[in-house]
Image (cartoon, rainbow, N blue to C red; front, side, top):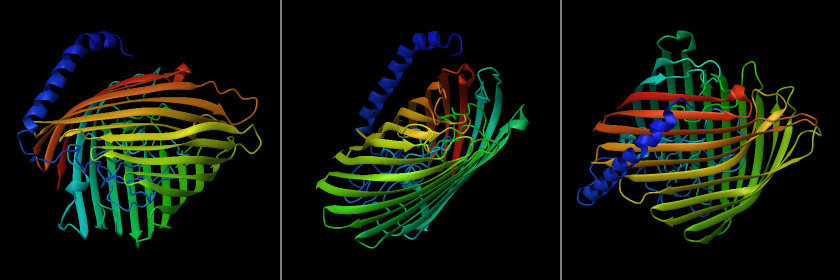
Length: 494
């Protein structure tokens, strides 16, 4: 960590915390007597019965405010029979080989949104129930004191990010309870002031569709990420909260993630769901991988607000040489519990068995996802998620790594126009050998914190400022780094 930073934090933390919580209490007092006249990021829509899947379907992942929906597990999810808030797209920094459903609250594979415009509720057109469109433009100016996220080559620079986005759709793209088709596209141009050779052009594409005939619900999700930089996570999280710690350097990677599900209602309380997925992680000049998986799950609606499922998934993982190809199986139990209209909980837990074509013994490990969304007051939003997954390393031959993470996001609207945000997360990456007699000692502890303030100037324009600190402590010192960023941003919505 940078010298002096702990002492600065220790000196000013009580003062800042006192001001922050005093402002929160003042805002709650004000909002108890004032109408909610402006949209809130935290209310998009609220995590009520309309934002959690019905008993006969698997919960969609990552119901953090604003963002295009992502399917269930890394193998992703079923078409919901009740409205579901738009969720974030995938984290595009690490290969996803796991087949557990993503949590209701986004982890490193989802969004921690800094945009004060609500997502699903702001899609506008002259025919809101038939054709939908939205245009946005975000411009950021950022000072970064470690643009290479390097332990030995710390270089600072200013850069500008220009990020237009278009969303178009037809049908029920907000509720997803009827047929619909939706496309989100966002290019991102990163322009450095002094290091123009590090300029990058990234593209994120999210396509999803669904069909509902009553007892049968079909869904298809496609995420494409064409990346030239190290830390573009998702369409609605472009500040780079989750760096590519596997590479610990600016990295080119192209990712194609496909997910299809079919859910058939057998009775009023029992449904059967089939899942199929395909993931390609192409690292030019490094270790690429291609994974397919399929699963079958049986769901039962125990109570009006409690549903659960049990089943299994199997898959095959082709990895570039010298890393060996792999097969894996999972047995999972899933639970969706709408505690109240303001609190939702999703959990998935199981065991994964991974084989390495006889090159080593079967690797057995727990895998899980837990997520919760909480909206205690108007304008207040809290999300929490934790999970464990297995990935192929794109940079260390004959090695995979198990990622265990926890992430939280708090957002508070003050005086109708000001949005205070705080995002924090932790990730442990434990590397494992895919060959006998190979040592894989690397273990990383990565964490970040990002406070932010955004102001809704008009319903079409917002501006804000944020600070991001990232820190990776690796047992292999070459991969360790710390990074500080200070950014200002403006978002215009058409």
